[in-house]
Length: 185
Image (cartoon, rainbow, N blue to C red; front, side):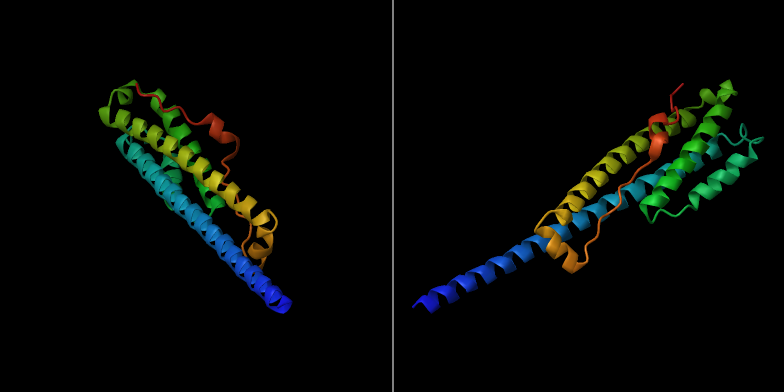
């Protein structure tokens, strides 16, 4: 009789352990997929930003004709890979620098300030930068949840056995606080 009770308890413990492993695994898969989805949203937003910068350069081309470096930089920016958080950071740094140069040149040409297409592009760039900031916040929040989940005991046992590793945060550095001015004239 005691043997049956012990066997029953062992079966319950085994079922509980298996259920726990399944719950932890599914939670990690869900968090991982949420992180990947948010990262893809950031990639899309960064691509939009790059395209808008290109459109802004095209719209102001006659004013930027003496700034040949801007055209080269925009071409490099548009071909920058966006596969990793480090790629996103590099692309953001490049975009911030290019926008700064474009706006500095535009300030020297009052005519361009009145062009409606330029105003709309500046507003669109401002909106896409806000979207990138929101997505970056969400991504980093999801990464934090994932990283904590794989580090706490006893989840770390399952995460280690299944090969889950810490994810990197998406950091833009100091430049974020110095976002280029995108005022509408």
